[in-house]
Image 1 (spheres, one colour):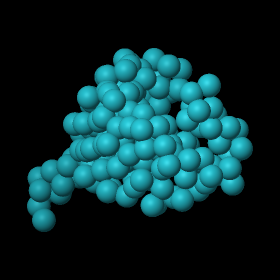
Image 2: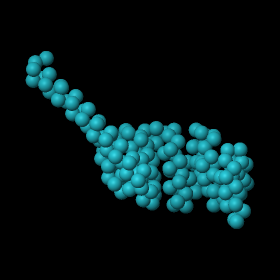
Image 3: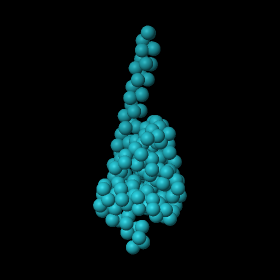
Image 4: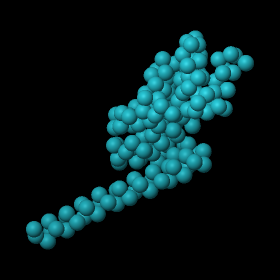
Length: 169
């Protein structure tokens, strides 16, 4: 290799690492904004990260979570779906999908998402709770009560909360 080619390779490697460091820094900053409830700032940085690293599942999920915080359900769903294209078994993305479908009153889609979460993690109490609520909203009370029974073994507080929702009190 001649000197010019060697310098070009070194420069290319440097730029790759610098780009990665920038994306990592933006992801870390976006997480801080998210944790502080500054979802708009988080979204701005995460758009940059996902453009630089389109296969970064964590960035897509945090983007979905940030859109959820802004109550931009359709945008959140798109971000979670992108995360699921990368990792179809991602529990957090599936749960976020369910939450946003529930908010949009698309309970059949929410039920599907929550069921997948529970397939992956049968002890995910919040998913059982949300599934029970979705069943209640679609008047499938026997299925809602099934979730209540499961919740009794996982989280008594959530079980009681679901019980009161089902009974309408």
